[in-house]
Length: 296
Image 1 (cartoon, rainbow, N blue to C red):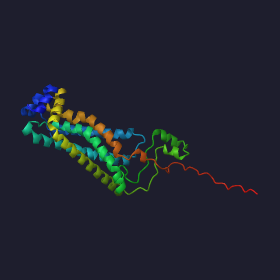
Image 2: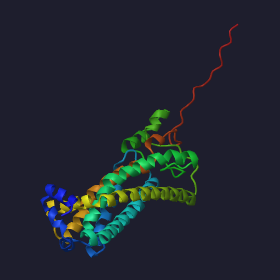
Image 3: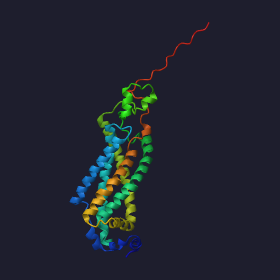
Image 4: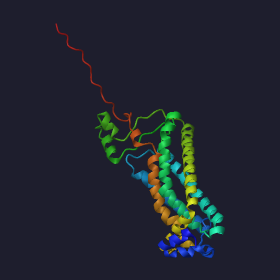
C-alpha cells in the first residue's frame, strides 16, 4: 500500500479497497455511455430552468435581449466546461489506470465538477475582474455592454408609479429602473460585440482550467482516494448510482451555485446602469428666469 493510500486509510476505512485495479474496474462507469448522455441532457434542462429563474427574480430585470446575450455566454462556457470535464476524466482515467488502477471516470468527473464549481468559478471571477478595466481602457470593451442598450424592464411597483404620471424629477425617474437610450446599433454590430466578449470569456476559462487541471494532476493520488470514498460513504457502489450522483445530483446544486455567481460578473455592473434620465420619463421643467427688476 502506497504512503498516500495508507494515510487516507486511517481516515476512510474503505480506502484500502482502492489499492487493487480489479476493484476499480468492477465499480467504474462510462460517462459517454447511454446513461451518461441521458443524465447530461437532464442536467442541461435543470441549468436552463435555473438561468431563466434567475432572470425572472432579479430587480430591476434586464431586457430579454441583453439577458439572452449575457446568459448565452454562460451557456457556451458551461457546455465547454462539461466537454472539458468529460475529456479530462477520460484522459486521466485511461492514462493513470495502468500505473495505479484508478480508472473510474465517475471519480474523475466528480473531482472535476467539484473543483469547477468551488475553485474555477472564483478564479474566473478574479480573472474577469482584472481583465475588465484593461479591456475597457485599451480596447473600449465593457463586459456586459453590447451597445445600443434598451431600457431595463421596471418592477410591478415601478409600472404603477409610471402609470400614475407622478414622476416629476430626475431621481424619481431613475428609481423606475430605466436608462437613457443611445442610438441602437445594427444587429450584426451587436453580435460582433457579443462574439468578442464570448471569445474573451472562453480564453479566461481555458487559462484557468489548464491551471486547475495541472493542480489536479499533481495531487491526483490524494484527490482520487478522497472522491472515491465519497461514493463509499454514500453507499453508491453501482455504475448507475455513481453516474447519476456525479453527473446529475451533485451538479444540480453545484451548477446552480455557479450560475448565480457567474451571472453577477458576466453582466454589466448595476452601478453602470441607469446613469442618465430616460426619454420615457417626463422632462423636468427648468426654472424660469425672470429679469431682475429695474430700480430707479
